[in-house]
Amino acid sequence: MARTITFRSNELEISKKVKDIMEDKFKKNGFATSDKLESDTELVISVGGDGSFLKAARDLDFPDLPFICVNTGHLGFFAEILPDEAEIDYFIDCYQRMYFEVNEIDLLEIEILDNEGKTIKQAINELVVRGNRSRTAHLILHVNGNYMETFSGDGLIISTSTGSTAYNYSAGGSIVDNRLKIMQITPISPISTNAFRSFTSSIILPSEDSEISIIPEYKNEATIILVIDGEETKLSNVRSIKTRQSKKQVKLLRLSDYEFWDRVYMKFLKTYDYKADELRRR
Ligand code: NAP
Image (cartoon, rainbow, N blue to C red; front, side, top):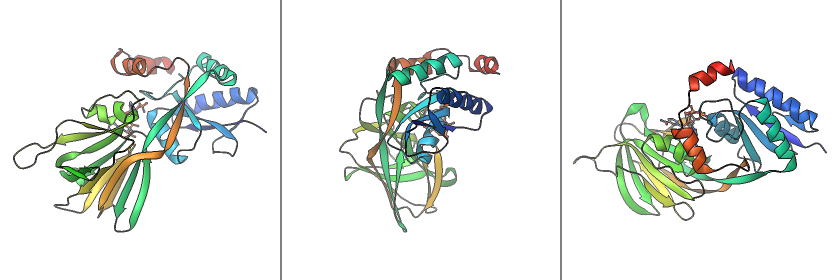
């Protein structure tokens, strides 16, 4: 039976080109390739940026299979491979020799209750709850059934440790070592006045036994915006949004030299000229 590699790529020309090159190389090494999940898919290769990986995992419904990301995007925090031939050859060799590790990434389970009933969603990075049409969001926050605050401001981010380097970090949240099992609640532009008072910094909770509940307090219109890993939905009459650790995980294949804090340094602090790199790749 053929060993199948499933490929997902974004619409960039470079991504399609890299996907074709990789498919060709895998086929020459005796693998079958597909754009869909097959019953014998053993690895999913996502070609693009982090956003492409988030979309691929969501579109494939978070399968119990390892993913590896090839960075043709901008940041590539999840990526293991750069899109050059030598690196692709090195990866295929490592893969066949099984010189890799598989990291399991915890997901958030998000339970949305509205007049229609319950909907369950999963997130790799985060859930964002915002007001509709840039209105102030008023959100009643409970942790494990305990009242915490009535937040007023632009919104709340509930981030995994994996998502801590994404929107959470831009909003002033902490970068968390991705071996830690936590959920981080980070306010976006909280109002802290005599009229409205909310925490102005992040709160970090153990994810294994915590449940975060948000009840929208509607003042003008009963509509809020939920953004899950960048996918936005406008919802009306949401009664509550509960977030906890999911039973599902996503697996990321790591070559043996992966180190989280090195990745943070390389992606956040090391000076890198994106424009020069883009010109070089043309
Ligand atoms: P996007 O353009 O796909 O992503 C925005 C930036 O976030 C990109 O540079 C992306 O990397 C990077 N990114 C995604 N996940 C990351 C992670 N875990 N660690 C570090 N960087 C990460 O935007 P989108 O489609 O709206 O949403 C996808 C994700 O982007 C969301 O889950 C959210 O975390 C993040 N986002 C950030 C902001 C912000 O920082 N103000 C605003 C909206 C969304 P690539 O360049 O490799 O794609």
